[in-house]
Amino acid sequence: MSAADTTTPIKVPPPRQAPPPTVPESPRRKRTSGGAAVPWALLAPCLLILALVLGYPLGRLVTLSFQEFGQSQLWGFKPAESVGFDNFAEVLGDGEFWAVVVRTVVFAAACVIFTMVIGMLIALLLQRVSGWVKTLINIALVASWGMPIIVATTVFKWLFDSDYGIFNALLSKLPGVDMIGHNWFASGPEGLAVITLLVVWGAVPFVVITLSAGLTQVPKELEEAARLDGAGAWGVFRYVTLPILKPIIVMLTTLSVIWDMGVFPQVFVMRGGHPEAEFQLLTTYSYNKAFVVNDYAQGSAIALLTVVLLLGVIGVYMRQMLKIGEVE
Amino acid sequence: MSTAGVSGPRRSKLGWNLLGLLVFVTAGFPVYWMLNTAFKPAKDAIDPDPSLLPTGVTLSNFSRALDIADFWGSVGRSLIVSLAVVVIGIVVGMLAALAISRFAFRGRKVVIVGILAVQMVPLVAMIIPVFLLLNDLGQYDRLTGLILTYLTFILPFTVWTLRGFIVNIPRELEEAAMVDGCSRTTAFLRVVFPLLAPGMVATSVYGFIQAWNEYLYALMLMSQQNQTATVWLGNFTTKHGTEYAPMMAGSTMMAVPIVVLFLLVQRKMAAGLTAGAVKG
Image 1: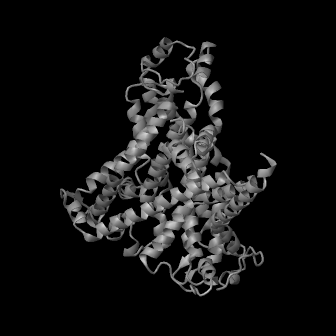
Image 2: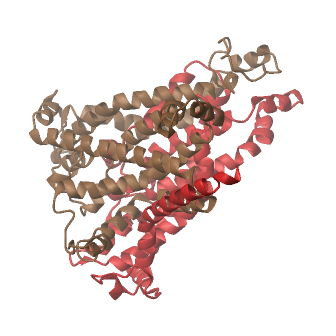
């Protein structure tokens, strides 16, 4: 595959290589070098659409965050004027913004850690259970994975309803506990804990299924050898399984960070479209500034800061993806 | 396995199986409870001491759900949008995927990195400028506007996934066809295309699911009369409270077709995503 996927034909092939292509380099070269126009023509429709629906809005996001843009600019009563870094200064100088940043980071970290740890544990468990149990778990996982986020959120809202929710009813069955009527969304941390549960419930299946696929590729001989050398179950996992799974784990973790930092509908729908101050994450905060306070410029500035905050993580993910892309 | 050791592993297997069943029950419970509530008589749904087992089957919640707002209208709009997005995405994405997987040209790497990178921009961050853009184009509250915006995430996804499927088709097959006298185009149509078809179906179905499930843009860019299926689900909560049992019936109607579609393609998509990961 690798020859098909590298840009420069002269590049030294990686050591582990499929047999050399039967067709010599030259005809391929002739075919591709003549027609640099062909690939660009094939790409043109895609790039045009992306420039319109992605490139332009991204550019506008940046310019907006340096302008004054409110209701009167939206209706065209006033031209949008550049205000330099005023929006950023205002956002960064606002204590509430920092509270939101901290809340978002803690929330996303909790989601990612729980997703990855629970996902790993279930993937390992799947290797040890009987076939029929494995099938049952897989059915449950795929069902929860396939559930539309909005439906899942609606269902969780029902599960955690204060008066008729099954969760409170089940908790109250425990001796000495009476949770009937307990409102999980009265306080931010408790409500966000429920939302964390919802996010983790939806995210674990992807992690389990990806890790399970990875686990099947861990050579049994290596595990055996480690065991003969006296490693316990933990030792085998730590020194054999984990290093082999590392590329997958890095990918899953970075993807989870990106997804969990972008959580929006879960909070929005759970709080009936108006998340209270204690529930605001960067995404809902930006939305609020733009569409509730009608300060589109500050909303954009917050959105841009969120993207910047994510850039490092995105970089790690991209490096990993490209590395994999080259061996393909 | 020696006979002496049988009872040991078997007993430990029992422990793992019990743990596995616990995982099954926990992971599956929300789905079970959705179905349970959906088919329950509405008065049993607001029992402070709910019964965990079904208490009788009724379809009244479903008929109530169908009466709420404009169910079929919103489903129709969701269908139009999702299908249009998938068709445009597959056609345009296919051409682009071919370009980056079968041609060597200057700037190819930049395009690949770009397509990968734009998938990582959170959709929420784009909502403000997209809203302003559609406002300027006169496409606010129009299905065409929504279709256009959905391409922001469907198109890069389609290109990337199709590329994954294409690079897994040996180039030698095409070359053999060309040696036998096919032109580049016929070689593609006769050799690559049939091999790619399952991948294209999986990509389309997955793209369809993503477009169907989208909530934020649908909420922001469409008015109440033009809402799509995901937004429709919000109609069960009014000032007077939430009608939970019909809402679960509505959820069931939304979720079951999507979960079934998902079931059909999930294996293929998951395999495509991880194919190269361990080798790396």
